[in-house]
Length: 148
Image (cartoon, rainbow, N blue to C red; front, side, top):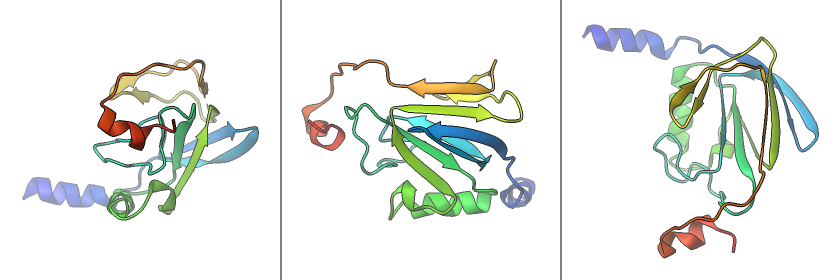
């Protein structure tokens, strides 16, 4: 019962937001975000088809900035993913790009790289595509994941 009560208190607690400036395709944006995802994957956080139009060979990243402020709203956002694409969730900004520049305006923040904690040494990041990568993949998945 104690775990249940503790969890109930946490669900309505505000999640810390980070003041961020970012640039995508030469356009600068600014806001307060709880988390940011930069990926080129169809499965994120155990959710298949997180991005409905993701292709591995389009030389673009899928970038998401989330400003959802508490766990209850975040849970509702994940529920929405059952019927819709992440780009239709309130409090989420989604982009496809080959270059994103992100600056944490309040100093360094730790990142998670493939599930591993990465202690940041800088508050500014530039993430871009550099070269094509060849992959081996089962033929049954080719049409879903590739343009060509």
